[in-house]
Length: 435
Image (cartoon, rainbow, N blue to C red; front, top):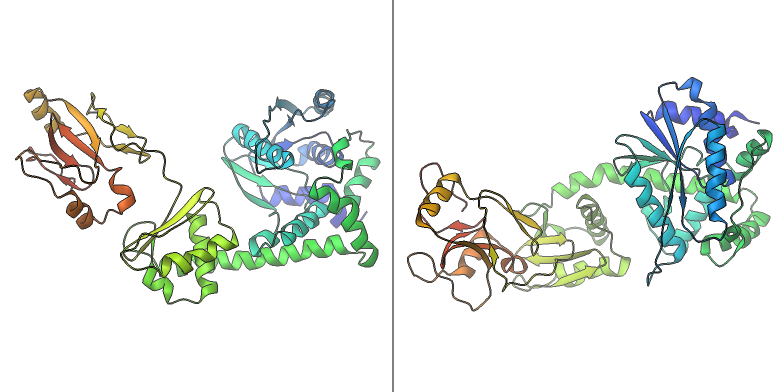
């Protein structure tokens, strides 16, 4: 077997290039992951400091899945590899296939047990990569989707590695036969109902009949797209900084409008990534310049998608997760003003009052409460005069959707602080000014 198709040689080079203090193998019991497990165990003398563990996730979707876990445990025992297993209970959800739900739950479970700085290894290979390229192409994906699966990426507290990604399926099968490995067969893999299985059993063989190297070609195309993505990841952050808005984590609408539409879209996607927001679909992405960037400066347009939304205020463009439910009429007693108070409506903590304030207010025997602004409801400060709340919010640059979530701290019936905006009582010596 050629060196470049030898799992041991490929894995050894990978572990040398991407060192990690410990490895967790996602072990299904199938042929691919068994090859990965066996190769890792074989290479332990070459990497004596490497901690090696395997984990089996039982999705409970097959009648014989309990026996698979037993097989995995026995295999790991024979190889002297630490083993653990976890059984998941999946509840069908609308809008997501059972296969996608199982994959999502599996990775969540693996991320939860991965030690810090460790690397999770999966046995994805060249055919898996080719299938992913085709699936994403048929979904109309761009550079990110067509780059398919990266060899290494951040994952939970560590990294996820796919050391066998460049190997054809035949190389893994040859290794398994040569080493006399025994594995389990998942009967669901024979079904052509899932899109990936249909591509594997019907489409790829048809393409290979005309273009014999189709899997390698598709994987190579993914590599070229990954190179393009890497270049964008270098260039886009610098360009993004040039269109920064007046407030943290915002973009300037005027500066964005000077750019070509293609660059606008690329910068918006990069911005969402940096903010850890899910990317919108193409249609939603195009709505942002059409309805938000082009809106009047005093308008309050909004484009939303699952997990994110974009709004504008003045010249600033905001991207944020969906706002949590909030009742502006609620009143929160602040019994321990020396401790931060969680504000569910804004998803933030209210900072403790300064010590000098607490001592002064405690001497007066006042009761502290936290309330929220409701438009049209008068607010008065200790002098009895009405507080022009809208004016204070405008001067502080608080966007309208945040205003009813800003904490108003009251001493009895008097407003003493608009959190992060202004204080309305004299500050005792040493107390900082929040406004």
